[in-house]
Amino acid sequence: MIEIEKIELLEASQGRIPIVAGPCSAESENQVLDCARSLAALGIKVFRAGVWKPRTRPGNFEGAGTPALEWLRKVKSETGMAVTTEVANTRHVEAALKAGIDILWIGARTTTSPFAVQEIADALRGTDIPVLVKNPINAELELWIGAFERLSEAGLKRLAAIHRGFSSYNERIYRYSPEWQIPIELRRRIPGLPVICDPSHMAGRSELVPHLAQMALDMKADGLFIEAHPNPAQALSDRAQQLTPEQLAELTGKLVFHRDPEPADTAFMEPYRSKLEEVDLKLIQDLAERFRITGSIGEYKNLNNLAILQPDRYNSISDELVNEGLKFGLDEKFIRLLFETIHAESIRCQINKKNNT
Image (cartoon, rainbow, N blue to C red; front, side):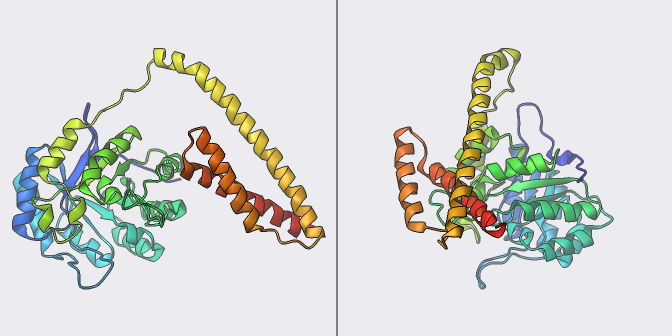
């Protein structure tokens, strides 16, 4: 069981959501301080800036390194904001702790490596500094949970997740697909864990950041992690997705906070919820019947030496189901994902039948 304690620096005030903001990279002392002053004037309480930047290709700006930690110290001293930066190894952890960094975050690439997360957890053993963990690049919930388990086993309790989206070959709108169901399941698996949304990385383009920030709020995010730069066009990394402080102010001013249901709302929705429960139960019963039939087909294939997978038939049926679903206003991506999942389970049932005969 992972024990979670609250992170005071990220506590929400009435009618507001905690926002961590700052540039993707700490590029210069002037850039960092100019940005911090502007964000402090907006009421931002936690300033973020990457000191060490993992880049996909060598030769790109990889951060100013350890000297930039002094710039973050000046941000704390001058503005009173707490500061946070990314760490990826023991050397980063030791330097950040020595510099008095208030919060650490583990990036998506690092979360993907259990070796790297364990190294960080070991370096943090005996401290109680808050640690934010970004989701791994690929949609692997267990890797994400494993990172929290490693940190928890090292004695860290002030933990939070950063949902920054997942790499997807078919994604055409966002840089990283939101896959909202994954952070929802993370919350279920680790009760009490705050989930902060990073709409900047998810969007990949500054004009999409406000939309995703509102979606995150609608999904009950516990905070926002947003990249802001005094002059995004001149940024040395992730320039397309960074907002100006003025744009961030506009975004926060337009966020809509939804209220929790009251008794009258619950009374109105109850008949619909009861009907949904009936439909869901019927779905379960129909799926059970479907897989029973699948098992019978699997037995026949096994007895007659037929291949389990028949891709031509699957492709044909899949297209028919998509067309049928579109008639009812269902989303094509959803229909395909649904029947891909059902088909995968059908194959598994047939393989089990074969192995048990």
